[in-house]
Image (cartoon, rainbow, N blue to C red; front, side, top):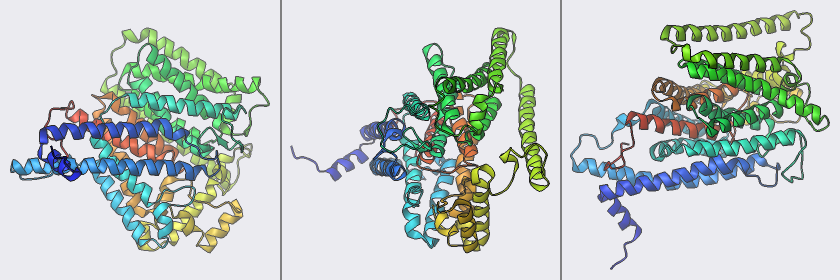
Length: 548
């Protein structure tokens, strides 16, 4: 028998829609699962020479694995598309490709990919824009790779839930290593040690970024997937570890993440009484986790190796979190015992509760803005020690200066650059080309080079412009909105809502990097696939062709 060459095999698969469709789906699913396991399970632990150039080493691992996966999935996907086109051509259908299956989120991804390419072509710093600033690498290559992965992962992922448990196991180990590092217990034999670098992630801001996008997975499973028995205990333990890691890591930006987390889960939990009851258990775990750190600091007073004046450290030293834990747990027990007498929350009560929590949040923000404004303008006696109420360049650990730099840089941009940006990840190159902005940054940060505004949207306005940031937000908000709408009947989709909402909220005082942005895009792709699966009610593996 004559052996067929590779092109002949491809043609056979394309022509044989029955066999080819099943083969392609299985092969694509296998590669997709392998890639996701690699990213969620292995990637967080990869280190090359310890913390030396950890940003570059993490990036190389991610980009090499992702480009390889993208090449393989693109080959499988192109064959799949040709097969669909061939089948529809035979059946003389009016449209060879059904564009109705391109969701609003997918459309925003296409527009975003197009916009960042235009931004790159218009950039005065193309070499920087191609790969990104050294140590950050959020350039054109990475962003286009994420857009490509979105389409193929949302086509081929099989929706298996064990991915989440792998992610929980890996992230729990990352968090445990971070907790031990903070108390000077080093399981990893690294030569260079710096309290600002913990676990296998590096800088505390990177650690907090990873925590903010991945820990909500375990929290969402605990609340909305209704685990029972051992799974519930495991999820509860995971949450405790994540909260302890948050209190230990040192960055005060975790407070914004927790604020966003409790707001969105309380908002969602008004839809079902069992979720609302468990919300109080979650809050109690948060309070008791702070006290666990307090006990650890008492038992090992010389082990804790970070700033004891940070907001997290102050909360762990305070009895407030203890009483938050006790009161919340008491409410949980009371509601749990009485919940069988309740009816489910009706729509009017749900609207009332949501308006109440939204009003409380808005009120708290307005009060803070008022106090901060007055304290900055004329000063408020007794508030001198609260740096968060002084809106100057030192505010937010220097974020006042970084935000001012971003605003001034955007003002100086030409009209076309305001629309399309100065180039992906070119913030640093541009702001230091402006004499007044560069002088202000050197005055505040010395020789340290600012690579972003510590506000993802402000950084994005400079890097990719108004169009870019609108399309970027469109990706996140469209998927969040679609999941919220559909999750009424499929609560598993709330996982994506919580993760992506927390990512956006946390990055209002932080930045995109290779340990949070890639995971956010993977979650968007996976959420897209779950929406497709729910729309079809089930995956029909006997279909001759799959919609594209």
